[in-house]
Image (cartoon, rainbow, N blue to C red; front, side, top):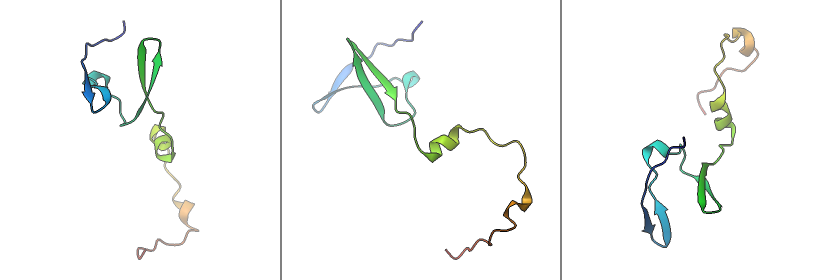
Length: 79
């Protein structure tokens, strides 16, 4: 069964608004709203970018080879 909750609509300037109950909160501060007949559908925006992609990856289980950075120049802390 679909979760439902009675809410009240209110005015915020010239916009109609609603408060989203905690159990329906979205993670980000932006979303997409669309209309399907008399229904309003609010859905999160798919996160894009490197950080969002990296956040979906699981950690590596195997240790990294210590010799991988032998050919690299030392870090310069003066930057």
